[in-house]
Length: 147
Image (cartoon, rainbow, N blue to C red; front, top):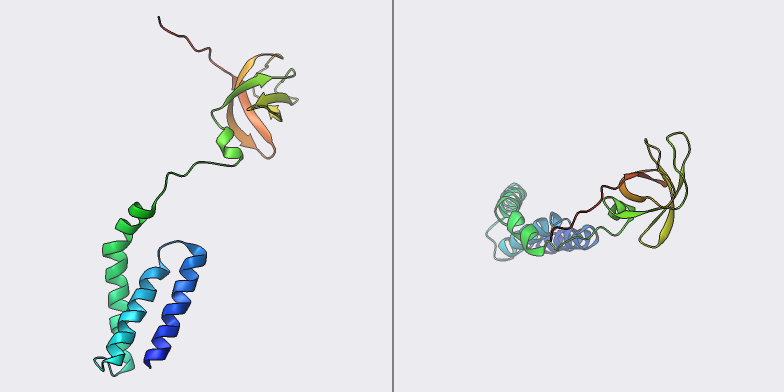
């Protein structure tokens, strides 16, 4: 393979990395660039040697540097969807029984909710899960403040 072909492989791997952000194809792109340099300075003349060097460098980079890179680039993810409601507290807006759903207000929003226990209106609730578009709730345990 030629230097240009290895550079094209590196660009393709780099592009895939940009769209996936999984820190896998980055190492393939770097390995392809290293092989391209080796081909350019005529260190690797046969395709078999080029592929072997590409595979070895990729494996070494993935094993030795990917865990460090993942830690370095890992940000504190905040749950920004409906799963963020689990553990939140709210108020039952209507009576909820095990056989019929009611409504609860959590973080200023009204949600349909179901429970395996009867919950009266105006009772403090805790979200324990999600079932489709309904929140699974239970009566919240009162918080005691020590003085």
